[in-house]
Amino acid sequence: DTAVSQTPKYLVTQMGNDKSIKCEQNLGHDTMYWYKQDSKKFLKIMFSYNNKELIINETVPNRFSPKSPDKAHLNLHINSLELGDSAVYFCASSQGPDVYGYTFGSGTRLTVV
Amino acid sequence: ILNVEQSPQSLHVQEGDSTNFTCSFPSSNFYALHWYRWETAKSPEALFVMTLNGDEKKKGRISATLNTKEGYSYLYIKGSQPEDSATYLCAARDSSYKLIFGSGTRLLVRP
Image (tube, rainbow over all chains, first blue to last red; front, top):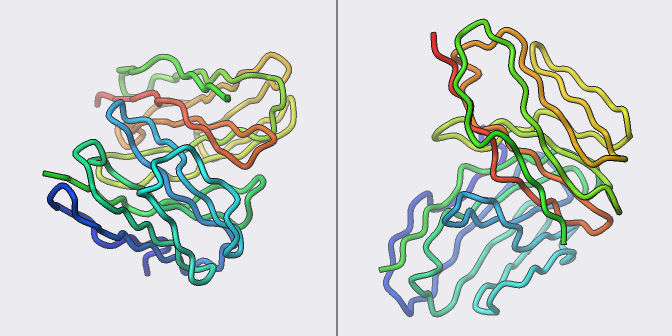
């Protein structure tokens, strides 16, 4: 049983399209995150929700919008996709926002053509 | 802004060698330090979370230490095995909720 699952694993789409990436965790964790792996392979925080409340909203274009319908799900919606949005996006969860290790999903490779 | 640096960028060792890597972070406003192991084609996996100056944690042949006053952490692997080959990521958190990752140390253990 996958602890943090992301769908889709791969996403190829054209510039200008709107797409969503879904993330679900079955660990009972309170906190979920979206990270982007940039071109230099750094993991950069984008958003975090704790019990459905937004606690981190990093400086990302407002074309990116997270949605957390419940604490087990954190989806990422991207409007008007641009070439520079191509990256691997990782979802993660933790018991809480404080001093707990993160459990990561397997990543979604987004390619914008 | 928290800046986390790791060294070396990559490391090749022989099976059986012991090795260590360094993670540096700003000591002011420090809150927590994480270590992760990231194997190719898998997700990062949490190894340790440390908060207190002088903390030492151990999991099998892997251990980590933390110095919050000078802003560094060491990760040690004793008797490296080929299955230890991975990228080891360090991440630090200050009083905000943001966990900032370093670029990682890529370890290759030759049989």
